[in-house]
Amino acid sequence: MKKTISIHLGKQQFVIEEDAYQRLNNYLRTLESSFNNEDGTIEIMEDIEMRCAELLSQQTANGQQVVTLKEVDKAIESLGHPEEINDATSDENTTKSANNLPPNEPTNQPKRLFRDVENGSIAGVCTGLANYLAIDPVIVKIIFILLLFLGFGGLTYIVLWIVVPNAKTPADKLKMKGKAVTVDAIKEEIENAANRFEKSANSFAHKVDQKGSQLSNRFENIGLVLGKVFGVIFIFFSFTSLISFILLQSGNIEVVPISGDASFTSLRSLLHLAVPTIHTFQLFWAAIWLIGLGFPLFFMTLGIRMLLGKAKRIITVALLTFTASIVIGIIVAVFGGIHVARDFSVVTEIENTTLTSAVDSLYLEELPMISNNKKIVTSKGIDFIQIENKRFISEGVNFTFRNSSDSLFHVHQIFTSHGETRKKAIHRAIAINHLIKIKENKLLISPFYSSPITNGISGHNVEIIIEVPTNKKLFINNIATETTSISHGMIYAGETINFWVIGGDND
Amino acid sequence: MNIDNTQAQMRKGILEFCILNILSTQEAYPSEILEQLKKAKLIVVEGTLYPLLTRLKNSELLTYRWEESTGGPPRKYYSITPHGINSLAALQTTWNELVTAVNSLNK
Image (cartoon, rainbow over all chains, first blue to last red; front, side):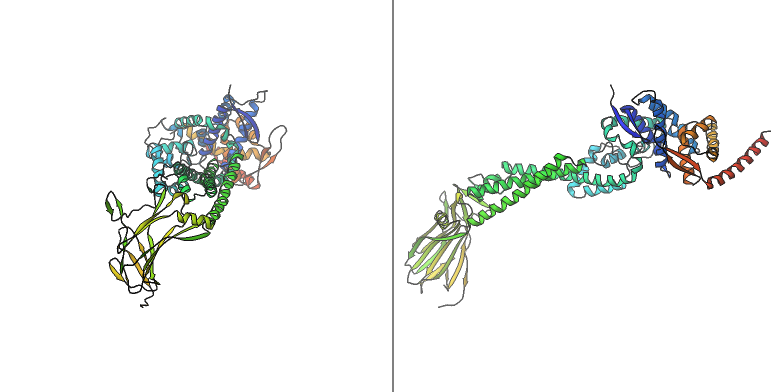
């Protein structure tokens, strides 16, 4: 049993066995290349194909259905081998006959750089280079991928692809490998090619009929290969982003460095942290999946589409699906944004504590954090978010000092929070923890405050208002401070207290 | 000196002349031309003819037209052009001179 191919040769239809087709195709291609691109090669080939068709149809006239190797060999015998034809017709080949060269000349022939399209992955640049340098193509490919990361691999490839010719004919292929072009060597090469074609014979089946459109093919090929190059780039990057996305989701890559006793490393837990409201969370979660999968999959499909070079129905459907996924994802994210904005719509400030003191001088100091009986002098870190006991730990407390209406120091501790409703905002503000103390003549303010993670990052703030009576002094950093209309400052752990006075109008 | 090669060169030289000669009396498609050339033992392999036909056509010595054939694909009928007839006449003169010259030397 043999596989057959249907071909169109010299305006006639033939059913031909696969091996016979390969021999015929190789013969015609070798013949074509032997004309050295002289004017009218296309026409000559057209005539020869017509004659070939005539010879084949004469032989198959007696009821035989399928063209076999026998008929092809007979036709080739009748038409003559390239060297026989060229002996009789060519102007240049007067002395140089392929027959006169000893067969299988050792490989001391100068090599030429060709692209090896048949064995290559894209346009055969790497494989061609490897042939030229006589090294393993894999090495050249790895170097090109490394160059790709450095940013100029793609360009180098495209330039080489345009500049370096394709090894089309068996003679070119021999030159590419540095072998002498002899009849025997060509025969060997053709046999090698036949083995390669076995797998892809069907896709090449129409080539016999395409000699006339070679020029347009050349330009189509440029687009095709460019498409393939970008296709590979698309697939590579979309695959990378897909992997990253999945690693982010699983928590194998930390999204944001979080320290403390809780682990919120995956995208999901981080989102829970940022958006504790369940509905908002669901919206964002859906958006993240829709966009996070939609984008890489879209570009991967696009890459596959470009690599295949033809539109398949399933690919079109996939592209539309992923586009829809991205669009829906964006819409959902916008809704999520609206939800978040609504969560910030009401601001509430509550006065948590009020302290009073009758001392003459009040010394503003940082309330040190004591851990294991040691004072923490500084806790500067790079953490973006710190979580302990399911509470966000924030640093930096505002304070304001102004004139008191009576003869006492008044200290107000104000908590600010946001929410969808006043009730919710108040609820969140109450949940803030912050420590202030008056101890003898010292006002101790902690630079840290905390809020439950369930309340999210809803614009929490702590402000301390200190009312200084006339004729009494507030000491900041042990320096007596003139109290004017309004003055501000910030307290951070272990740092000199930073403050500024607005309006220099001394009473 | 390679005798085969010399013979090939000699044949090649007169082949174009013979093609023009055949076509000077009638229109023909390549297979008919081949038949005559083969009969005259001027051609060994058929493939030789086609590059010559195209070359002659490109030099405007020949022209062709397509004709439908019964029970087969359309055929390409070649015919000689006025320019071709002139060239043929010149070649004929040369040929006659060559024959005379060679014969006189062979005596």
